[in-house]
Image (cartoon, rainbow, N blue to C red):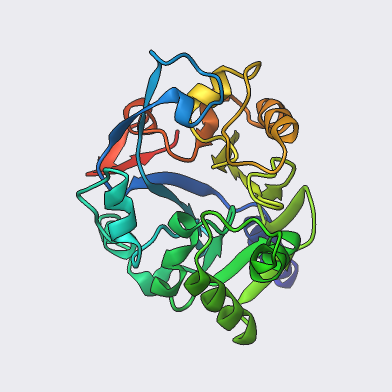
Length: 281
């Protein structure tokens, strides 16, 4: 009887260890503005003038059975007027979007920043309990060299610099050092695109699926489908940007699981869960 009891405890312990090492994640895309048709030449250099894409602002939720509620990017809430200048309306604050999935802002455990452009980083202060993850080199450039005489700071907001520095001082910022890093069990980040100084994309193991949240490392499906043509204008290295897209095709379990940063087609290709929300599956 004692041996059986010990055996049961060992089996239970092993099950708990296995569970903690192999979490299962669900991935959602959430759009928080209206959709706007833009010329493809705005996001792909040299694209035919007759081509167009439907763009939208979005962010992503990775929901785990390990207690993790992880955002990839955090949208914005202080730059709504700037979004309207681009023609985007019907804005819903990112934390309000999450309520449609039954999550409060305080439920968010982590935010993985693909890069520090205003429309991806401004919302980090909406989520007070979140640990923030960003590439070390991207952070250093964002808070430092970007604001020097020859720095490139288009798309950067000084207020967001202050937010990220404050998170660092508060012990809430995690600097990821390099490519192909598992930062949370079952979640890896990769560099190489150079949309910003050292932007990153995210690979999520969701059951047998490997889902890539590319964010602006692939701006739209148009960019992914036209690999031979130049990429978006906003990149430090156009060659690296294309090579990164090619690499994603080798990492995802299916090309349909490569999710770009601003393409409204995402919300037609996957099952609708709630208004403005689809599940990537």
